[in-house]
Length: 368
Image (cartoon, rainbow, N blue to C red; front, side, top):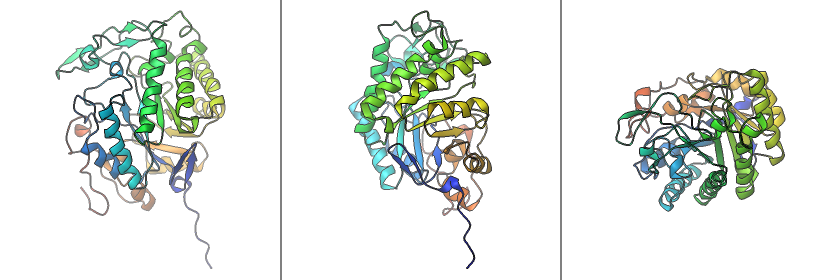
């Protein structure tokens, strides 16, 4: 009898804490700005996430824990009863389709505008504006404003905001949370030397700059269980003013972060880096002692062969994919069969409506 070939490891089950994944392909968190100003997930969100339930794990788009943390108009929240109910409908749909889904909790910090937060201010570790512009609540564009530096007395409320949002995610039936400490948003702003010029216990040394992330993850893990808690980081991504170009400081900061998180036993760490098999990422993985989801980049499309190699060679426990999942709700089937893929349409990424959101065809429906 001819022996059957072993399946590629990418398509085999994986356990991440309390999460049982049917395969090792993960839907990366993807900003899509499809809610109304109330931040409540709609029927469109239910369908969008349900369509992608064959991925081993879905990480939702960044959701704000408190209104002061909202970055974009059209971004969903995890604060109000209506938002929790909306996410419950999403979670139910994904589970009924056999999938797993966690909420990415994201406080934008200085990447926002007072017209978006509705609080009259934006906040950050230091009173330093990020470069660039942002689309305001009225649809126009404005320079990113100078934020207010959070006081030491305000930081516990920031931590509590993440904790409450994590509890809300569990109440909504989601399988866990991913704390967003990447891509230049608030927690990353504390990590970065260029964006954090504080002189208190949350600034200065690498260990101090890693403190907020460690305290948030510790508090969330205590609230909902470390087995349902994950983290996203993007060291050296150098985006939105969080520039990490000092190699010595970079290594020290992420070593301090990994050492501070290692005792928690997190479900996973989701790492975005252009060299996922490189020394920085793999050393972090070894130190943090948690399963790692790797994503090779923001502006490049992760390919089938790259994903297969990362898992086959032991560099990743799972691989997060972004644009290919936008355009191919059945990406697992396509990659398993080596089938052709739909091409994503960037002009539809951040606009409202179903077009470019829920209308990409599956293999069964035929080519676009």
